[in-house]
Every structure is written in structure tokens, then in C-alpha cells.
Length: 376
Ligand SMILES: *Cc1c(COP(=O)(O)O)cnc(C)c1O
Figure 1: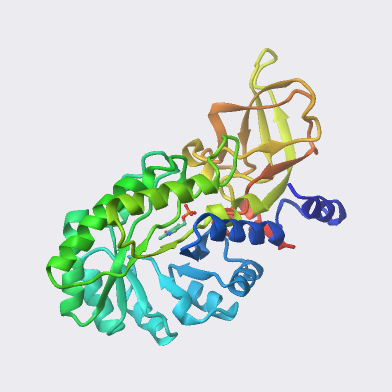
Figure 2 (figure 1 turned 90 degrees about the vertical axis):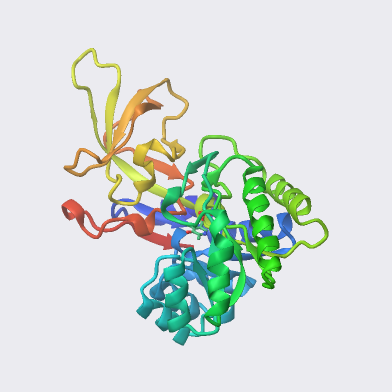
């Protein structure tokens, strides 16, 4: 919570829940990444929060961008970024989308199988391709599972096919899982990456770049290692596996760049006990899983929640959203301590909600409008 956000919330008209993002925090975060990983370019993962103000600020600061769709590409270009600073990192693209991005000037695409190479070769001839390899995501709170990336042993074949199809086999990418607490998580993926670099070299293909992905955490309730420790661990792993021939590297932070820059203000709609002796209260907010807090699925992300009564005695609560859908429960398996004096109408602040919230909000489920966002 920053003083600017506090002032903003004090002055605003109460029109339901809203997210407020402080651009000063985004700027500080960007500069911290540049400092912690000085030889690595930042490609902001636009999906984390595509607000035009954020894209404009980062474009001005010299950031590059990781996009997943044509409309994200257009948003980044509209923010003043040039197409050479864009990486199309989604491995799942229609051929028509690849062609549209290519017409907009994008020449760097991620692939993770032969069929995707064939599409890029047809729709964006001569482009550079990065092969994404699979990572198990252990140590992260929001793993990206088996949906993306080929087995490392197969990457050399994929890149060789790209070469035969007239594309430029450019490098390897991976993602160690979002909200990654283990600073050593990059080590194993970099060992595989170095082996692929060698395998490609044996076939006469020289790779240039390693895309280290995202995974850098935002501070929620759990303590997180400093960005500096990630930078050091990654550099150590690069030295270990590549020796003196460290390739060009990029990172794609999403959560780590914008997560702690945003705060949601919400309101308590109801505090209910299911029987007089019930010790766990149900607290219903005017925001839930469908209005921005989707990352509470499986209670994966546990946001810090502040109330006006935080000095009072605390007791465990089940926290739920306002909609008539039973999945709209935020924390139940692991009840959340809130003040016993918390009352209907109280405002609560849900902190570190700058990433993966506003665009996860449904359009009008149960008649609730999408989460309003202010970028200040
Ligand atoms: C979502 C995503 C990111 C951002 O991940 P964070 O954990 O939020 O930093 C980076 N790269 C790719 C390819 C992604 O899909």
C-alpha cells in the first residue's frame, strides 16, 4: 500500500470494488530487475496486466514485451513500442494470428513442436524461433504444468526442422512456474538448455538466446527471497552450464513487475455464522473468484488482506465472493484470520493484486460489472 494509493482511495467515489495500480511501484520494480540481472533484457509478460498506462511507462523505460495474442501485440505497439522489441511467446497460435503478428512486424516466435514450426514457417517466413522446453514447476505456487514446452531431448529436432524450413533457430525458453520461491529453480532448466545448445552445435546450428521466463515472485503473505538472490543464482547457473560462453539472455517477468503495485479495495457484504456456536465465520466480500481473484483457485495465492480493525482480536474466517456460485469461495480449506470486530460495510484492502486480476474478471457474471481499474 503506497501513500498515493491511500490518497486516491480516500478521494474516490464509492462505486464498488476497484483495483488501483501505482506506476511509481512498477517503475521501481523495472529498475530493480535491471539492477539484479544487469546483462538480461526485460520482456514484460503483458498478460499480467495490460493496462495502457503500464505498457506506456515500460515502453518509455526501454522494456521489451512478451505477448500471447495479436491484440496484445497491437496494445504494445500502441503504447509506443517497436516490433523488434516484441517476443510472441505463446506456443499455441493460429496460423492466421502468426501471419497478423508478422504483418505488424514481429519476427520472434516461440514454438514447442514440429506442427507449430510448420505454421510459423508458412505464416512468418524467415522469422527467429525459440523452442520452449518443459519445466516441472516445483517450488512455485502457480505451476504452468505440462501444457507448454517439449521434452528437452526433442528440442534439437524441433530447432533443426525450423532450420530446414528457412527459419532462424534462435534459442531456448522455459518457465520455472509462477511465484517461484526457489532461487535455484533455473539451474536444472539451464543444464538442459546448455545440452540443447551443444546438440544443435553438433548439427551445425548456433543458438543465440536463452529466455529465462518469469516466475519472479510478488510479496504476498509468505516471505520471498530478494530479487538480487534470483539474479545471483541465475548467473551462477549460467556460468556452471555455459562456462565462458554465456549466451544472450532475456527474462519475462509478469507478477514480479506489477503484482505488488496494485491494491483492491472491496467491501464486506455479509458476516454470517451458520449456528450460534459456529467458530468460523463466513465473510462475504463484494469481489470474488469471478471478479479478479481467480488465482485463489485451490487457494494457491493467498493475498494479504487489511481491515480497519487489524489491532483487534483475530479469528478464522471462510472468505467468499458475492455470486451465487459455490466455487466462488476464496479461502476455506485454510481459513483466513480476520478481526472479530469486522462488520458489514467495512472496507477491506486486498494487497499485491496488480497482476492477474483485472483481466481475469468476468464481463458480467451474476450482474456484477468487471473489476474497475485505476492506474495512477
Ligand atoms: C505468464 C508468462 C510469463 C510471466 O510469468 P510470471 O510468473 O508472472 O512472471 C512469462 N513468460 C511466459 C511465456 C508466460 O506465459
